Image (cartoon, rainbow, N blue to C red; front, side, top):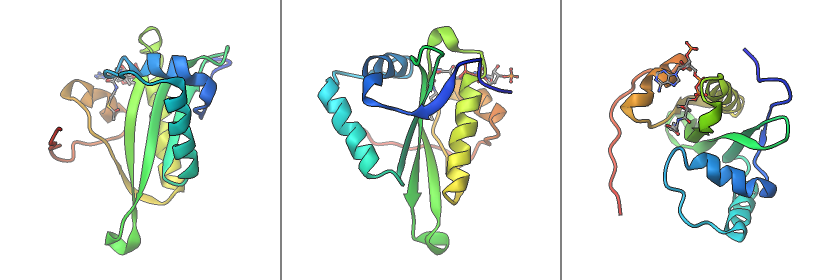
Length: 148
Ligand code: ACO
């Protein structure tokens, strides 16, 4: 399985601002984020580049069509091991069903493996468990949350 011709997976960049927010809005409410807030966040991710790996799939015109990230958490347990967290996966509505989600997750998994993660975990709604099973993930318990 491979990306459509001309498509690529690359790190997010400042000029992705508009499309990045638009694509993410298929996942959840993005809220008001200004271009300067976006750039500041990208700077923060870049300054912590061994923790945050924000990636996009861009089409042949370099427009963002999918977003996702792996966050690599350095732990103490299991002999100072690392755990990867998959976050904010979104594929533009018009591009869903073309294996982009699968290819993005595979790419993020490879980053996690290369960075030495002993496992990669994620939270998702029940309607998406079938997708993640296709990506090789297994049900591994219950998510709990407290919201403020
Ligand atoms: N339930 C069951 N199977 C699914 C689902 C689903 N919801 N979505 C896709 N699949 C299957 C496909 O049929 C395909 O199977 P096949 O290989 O047998 O043909 C396989 O999973 C791969 O599908 P893709 O085409 O790669 O999926 P797509 O590119 O459409 O991306 C995604 C799936 C990310 C869930 C997309 O629909 C989306 O962006 N949804 C809205 C946002 C969202 O819910 N994101 C996930 C948040 S969870 C998180 O961020 C950790």
